[in-house]
Image 1 (cartoon, one colour):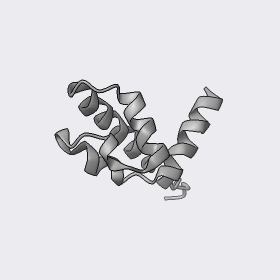
Image 2: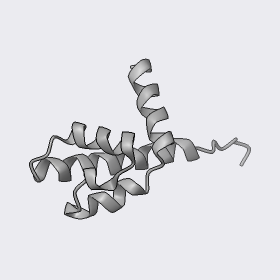
Image 3: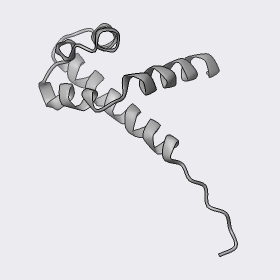
Amino acid sequence: MDHTRKFALAEDSNLEMKSTLTAVYAALQEKGYNPVNQIVGYILSEDPTYVTNHKNARAMIRKIDRDELLQELVRVYLLK
């Protein structure tokens, strides 16, 4: 046991955020909404009514910290 282990809390958090956002996107799409517009509306206003209750999407997106989400979106956009 001479190996150094990496602590990857941020990476795990980002994967969880992506999984949640993907599920919310799918729920919005299933209900006939434009998922991108609805998610942007939520991010900008923090009004949860931009997200449907279908498949518990509204509760799921409210668990995501909006500041962390914006940071990750900008980071991914600029680095890829």
